[in-house]
Image (cartoon, rainbow, N blue to C red; front, side, top):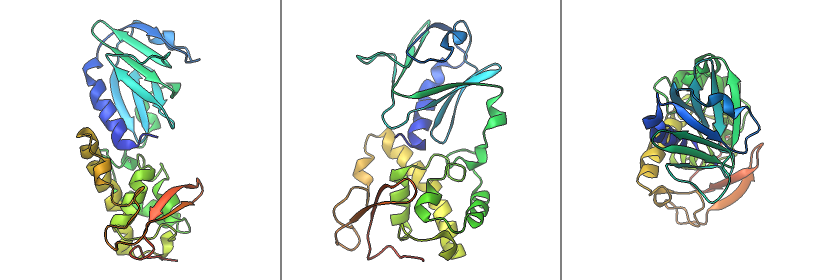
Length: 243
């Protein structure tokens, strides 16, 4: 599943089509996609793992799910969920979820909860965590209302960076450690973004899907922790359990 930084990269790649008129619309999506034909794209935005295509009075929310992909000015050998053709160029989305939502996107999204947004509010994130004090840190980091854009890779790497065991509970963290958790959720997302653009993300993984802890040289533990039972990689030795 693409994480927030990948969706920001997609948003940036789509900018040449901003203000351009859609001349062709097709795809397997069941929504009224023909409504977009002849309209100009007002804007492209992103919020967490949501890619947003904005029109006057409505917008599309695209979620890549687990295996969604896209192609710009090229096609895959498959029927797209959505194809948008312009005078110069095309956009194709595959294996994703697409919803058409009435209204203004700014009325529906809280940009301050997006870890890569200019409006990101770290203090607000801290307040939300304190209200969800009994949460496991794994679940807290994947809560999109608090950390929009943070996915499983970021979760694993952030907890390793700050030396927190994934089975730790939020209210057992010190105020200093809580601030560190919030800060690194955003910091690592921007690192992810830079590495992804250079096609070298995996080269920088320290704990995710690794066999040995780079700090302790001990075997990495792998477990499925939290509500979603997502793969979690950690070191029992250097990541402190706060419980």
